[in-house]
Length: 113
Image (cartoon, rainbow, N blue to C red; front, side, top):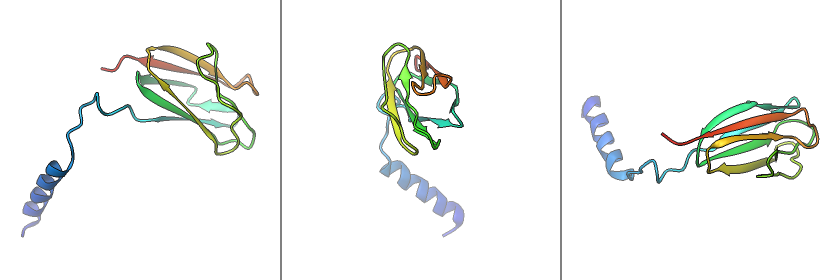
């Protein structure tokens, strides 16, 4: 069997095996924000409504993730610990580390296309 026919057959099998998923059924992929060098990186992030953002501490010191509006609040995150929050409504969400107030970040949530 030629390589072209083999690839064509493999593609046909994949189409039969993989379920059709509409964007509404496929939740937004998680997005990672790192706490590193006493900063959140990226400091500003834009996501679609329905997205989950996960903050992971990559520092040797504990950090927290606290919404200025009181929407979410993590406990102290030690090295390697994570905290996640799902943003369902469009808007601008500012947050800080309550232990190190100079660590600030912003999540902008937009309506999905």
